[in-house]
Image (cartoon, one colour):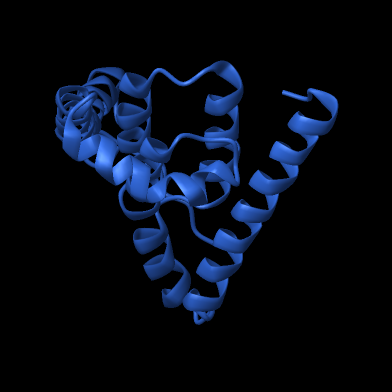
Length: 158
């Protein structure tokens, strides 16, 4: 195995200035990606909070979300977590003003099943059956949510 030795023409490790420049540029790029998702989601949910549309959609999802001890409006955060990322889900959860236990429940379930489209693509590229893995993550997320809610109701856990 041949290793390259640092020279002025071909440095193996960039100097500190170059690393800081690259790191800062990468950080700005990542921040911009997050801001593009988080701020619009937060604004839309905050504006819709208390509106007839959000209330109606929340009522529609209420029976399913009650299985996990959550209000119907939390379904929007789950959709964002499943389809986009956790940052978008958090932006939707904040204006809903959930209590600490409900936020923990969302974190547990979303931590298991999030960013399903992107991660499904990555999983598929490895030759694994992405649909099976994605379904497994959703089932595990629902099972964990049901168990955590049962523990909360029975023992006051959480």
